[in-house]
Amino acid sequence: MTYKADIDDERQANDEVLFDDPEITIVSQEGTDLFLDGLTIDFSDDLIRRGFRFTNPNASGSCGCGSSFSN
Image (cartoon, helix red, strand yellow):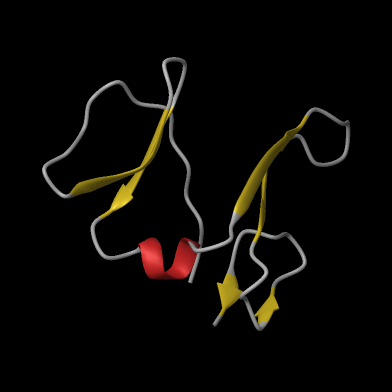
């Protein structure tokens, strides 16, 4: 499985709201929230790995880049 994050201003019909705040709304495809329980998202601006970092305490393994996991 892999994570994919995009910045968008339109919701799709199958989007499920996971977090809603006046400044940001986080949605996922319907039915994927089971795999996102406990997930934390951070943004790094360092020189080596700039971008979003996903930490999932429920993943049984992950690749070295942190963008895919097994459950």
